[in-house]
Length: 114
Image (tube, rainbow, N blue to C red; front, side):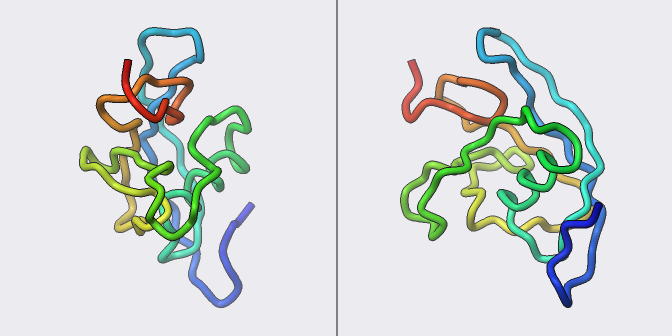
């Protein structure tokens, strides 16, 4: 199933994403191949991953969509980033929860660490 936007080329991205159960104290990275439209943002990639592979993936999906609230903060390839503003660049990507926040599940974290 392709999530490509009309008129945009589809690319396949090798995603390494952090997975952690809600009550777990440790997690692990899992790998997926995800089809997205070229030029998509990281949050679009996560939505496509959820649709194409695992509907249980938790990530921040309620946010301002303009890069001001910080609710979609993630680590993308080891660097702090906002998922709504960060474009998928290349055919591989690693996505993890931000440092210093308590992990609620997968990529979903509390607003402040405990």
